[in-house]
Image (cartoon, rainbow, N blue to C red; front, side, top):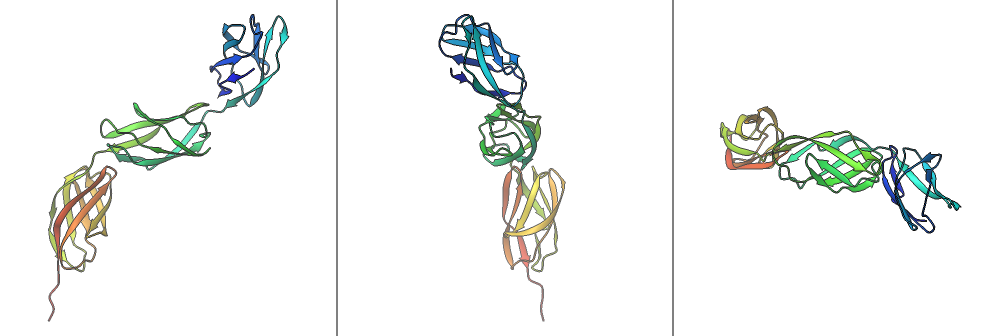
Length: 247
């Protein structure tokens, strides 16, 4: 007497099909001590909606001919999502994020707003998922659906790719320490600034402006790269390191 599916949420409400023989005229389907709702019945199958429950319970069918053998049904607790790392990325998607929580082993879908993705289950407490393309920049709700139900939402922020327009000043000492204002767009989520590949300290003023302090460098023109949650942008040969005088 197969039962499909053989697991569901502790809140019940799962539509289940039981197949076997001599099932016509079923009067009850028991999940442990509780009774399911019968929605359809033939001599070889019964469709039911299961009651709420917990743990593993025995399922059997009662007809005028008696009570069947029992099969096991597994109640799955609702999942809990605790964190999303990283919690932002490019509007184009394609980056991988990790979701940490509890009861995630039966996860089937991760929803990013109105879009969804299929996760890779790492363990009962962790999922890995490739973020789908977003419709626009901004924050959206992320939920995980498992056999046990759907999590409360976490927040994920889509960010447009940055653009760089200008630097001021455009030159400074090879010893570093020059304060440079960087102008562009999409800079609010900046995570890194480099001069010739060397990391610079920086402060974001707003979505169009940040200030970076040049690290020490070699004389000549170098690329400046700004990396944000939405991607990276480069101003090629935009800053010139100048050697100090010597006598």
